[in-house]
Image 1 (cartoon, rainbow, N blue to C red):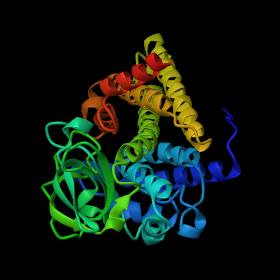
Image 2: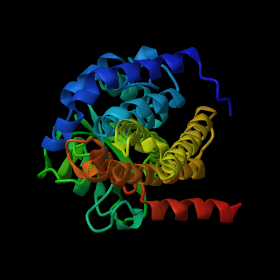
Image 3: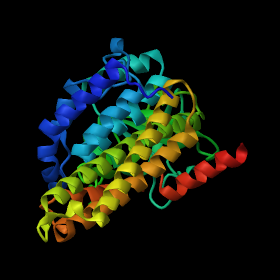
Length: 377
């Protein structure tokens, strides 16, 4: 794996860092407190090309690679993890599957609007009671003439109430095969319930989605009928790499906050950073962050080379999310009582980090995924 970044990758990372410091960081606490969807932040990022990072320029995107997207996501997450999560989902769970499996007509119809931020995408897989298990999917797609009728309920649809396009997964009437559909959210029969009151990533507003006999033309099918497992595998690989980058960004923010505090907080006439116990924590935090970042870069690099980095993406997401939780917890500990106050950002990092261990595949599911690949080899 080449660790030297291209000029284009470095430029996007630097641009993401600048907008994060200038625009995202000042509003992050309020977005979290109010559980407010960051529409203004998303609009700013759209103007910078960050909603279509890997979409070719003729289709309105930036024409960069997956690694560039991961670099940008880490920077965004270090300022506002909620915003970064929305950008990750839009790019990696909607735009990239559409780019990979969509027809030319589908690409021309959706990608320019998605890349420009005129429209936002969401991802509808999980269902109440069964999570994201394929065997538990109850949403059905019934053939009617040249089209389909979708019926069912999805849960935890991030950004759904604000999105214009949903990538929806449904089984056939016999529940023997899975298909993916591009569903306009203003279609008759679609409604969203009350947003969940979440522990963390509160600005990445999520809500249940109901599909009540939603009629779709045959052109809404993404890929082939019954080919939804391939679409889902590709989407989740990208989504997990993106989630890893978000975890690294949260961990980095927590580490930097803890370091600043340790240098500024004095006991017995010296900063607490002089205490060996604090130094050990900071050294371990930094090491864990670098390890997680390298795993995320490896998975992204593999995807850019055309590989199917299923286990690598799972490893990256597993390590990065658990690193984010450990580092954020240590940051709270270093700040002591102040770490428990909403006046200090580390308590938000702590809550956001915990969510990263659950979405895009829980740590337990990822360990099973990694083990299954290892045992096949």
